[in-house]
Amino acid sequence: MNKRKSRQPHCQYCGEPVKKAVIFRGEKVSFDASPDPAGTYMMQKRRTEEGDEYTYAEWLTDQEAASLRAQGVLLWKLHRVTCPKWPGRPAPRVAPDWLAAKLAKLDLSGGRRG
Image (cartoon, rainbow, N blue to C red):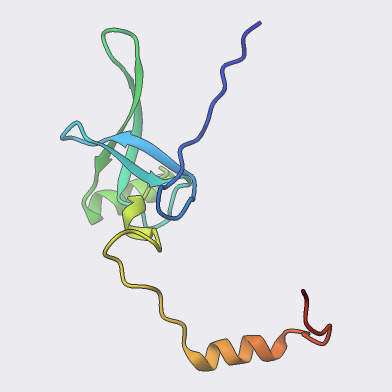
């Protein structure tokens, strides 16, 4: 018995799992692997005449997305919107006070490692 291995694709920049889908222009793009409460794309699986199955993503207006969310429909976000390492995206800033407070809470009394 042959088992088909299902490998989930990952983002080439941040390594997070992504979901691939075809958008209206026929382009295959990456979406976050999980639905998002603020998502604006609806996913649908469709079969081609040849029998192949593809996931298609349809962009929704804010009003359409809100209406579908109210009905319990799951929506997704483009991964390039949420990816912290997407090219051209500025590096996330960490407020020094916030970082200092977090470091102060850590128990670093074990000494140096190495």
